[in-house]
Length: 103
Image (tube, rainbow, N blue to C red):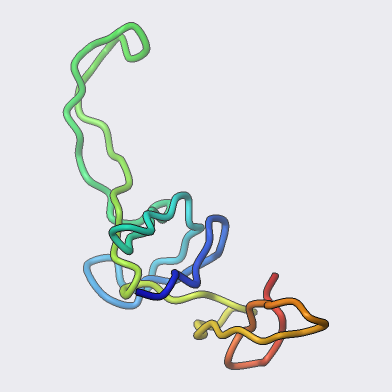
């Protein structure tokens, strides 16, 4: 299986599912399950017992992982695919729509 082209810190837009159209930054990447954690996307309710950190307890909203096929990288305000090129002997990521180097 090929590696994932998205990294933590990349800005992405959701292209499928209940949060379609939402944008956010990638917080975590799970390479084994091909999933990403995007801020403000796929919020779920989690029931928390009172503990020393959270005295009150109750129901909190929290992001959950979303499959990488349901998100797309955003470059200059538009969704684009990511490709690779060799420039000056180094492998770099490029935006397919513009051909510009991402990193």
